[in-house]
Length: 67
Image (cartoon, rainbow, N blue to C red; front, side, top):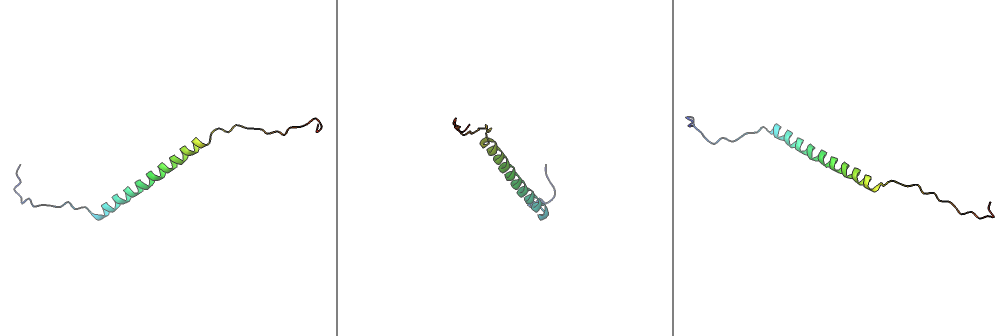
C-alpha cells in the first residue's frame, strides 16, 4: 500500500474538553470506589463484632429472713 500524498508526521489532537471530562469521570470513579470499599468494610466489621447477644439475668440471692 503506497500513499501518494505527502505523509508527514501528524500528531493526534485531543480537545481539552474531552480530556477534562475523562479526568473528572476517573476521579469520580475513584471516589465512589473508595466510598463503596469503606462502606463494605464497615458493614463487614460491624457484622463480625456484633455477635448474637444472649440474655443474662442477674438475681440477688435472697435469704430466708427476707421472705
